[in-house]
Length: 485
Length: 96
Image (cartoon, rainbow over all chains, first blue to last red; front, side, top):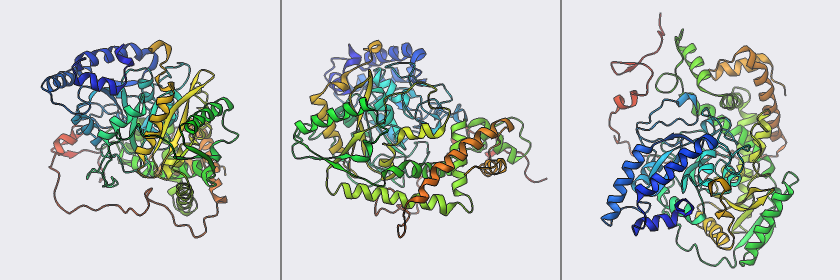
């Protein structure tokens, strides 16, 4: 079956004309349509544009031309602007927003020949860990539709897990690539801050947001990331540094690699079944010749409170642009300008987005700025310093991606803190701007478990290499939920 | 720290949000929980630690040359505007 092929295999088969792009696109579109009632992974399906792009790709391939991903179907998280195609960010605020331009990530993947099949569902403005805050309804976990897929890139993770697309773009502000990848049993990478352009990526928290990929394997993720990454003059935080070939050296031996076990991640909050899978995965790395040692990062437990100052502060500032004037939702019959602002925003945003905006407004308001915002930025530096010291001793850090496997819809919606603590192991990498991955490493009570790998700045290749070697030894990443196999 | 109803209403006003009377207790409760939670930071010893504003060490925000690089595409951009006339965004009357 075509959908079981990895992206790497599909790209090769397209190149040798063993399969055509139109044929592939039709096959995946049929899977998407069939899955929608159960999974709701897509907000928009762009079948017509996809078939036109696939025909063009087939012509290019027949002429021996085309980019590295020519004809390969992909999905974009509905947070990346796509010219002429609705970009909602999971919000009523942008329900009818047609982006006038492509995000750099979208433009680069298009230039590489990838064919977009649609826009993937997500938590509203990427604020959520369960995909339940989407205005377009929750996405469900393909392993068990009573469970959440994680968030905010829940649509991307569920779509790859159910093989509705071979790979999807995603973004990660506090775990939004890694946590859903772990919950859905797929591979996700959040690159170093500044590695992938944020131009055309709808902003949530600008010092934390980073675009990345969710795919079935590390090799597939490397193949897509290679096309996405790199300097972009249109993003003032984009880093002007050469991008290595992420596919080079993936097969090299792991002997001598020093792995640090994040002591604070193996705490009492970690589910024992989950922990067993992660420890078994670590033993695989040991067998491959890597050395393991425990590393303590004492300030890590403060990551979540730091995040819930910094991210809402940046969010309240970024989301001030939604004023009902230039684009986005506008209320009917405004009495005056203030009424226009207030009602447009109140109607356009959901409860979680309002909570974050208000938290941010509070921590930035007169009298509280020093106590919360500046204090959080100081603790952020302590956390970054912990990582810096750790990477003086080890090459990679490893631990669980989440404290538990996927939970039930509605289980954590009553109390925001319970939901926020779900990102307890992922947030620190965003605070320090580090690249981090989640790799499938087993099943706890029938649900996927994620191994998290964190590296120093710009060490994406090192992460992908370790993950790929692990995937040569294991087949967790090849497991597909029964109904979609 | 429990936030009062008046505080929550003031925060909502500063954020240009209008909360319905019935939702205020819920926001009051949630935001009080969040404020307590982030209050944990107080315990951290940050004496002499400089605030970290950029996630990459030693990198300052880049400046670009002061040159015109974009075309005027206001018509394209205004297609998403709720109300436009003669190339201008329309809002309710501000000056009586």
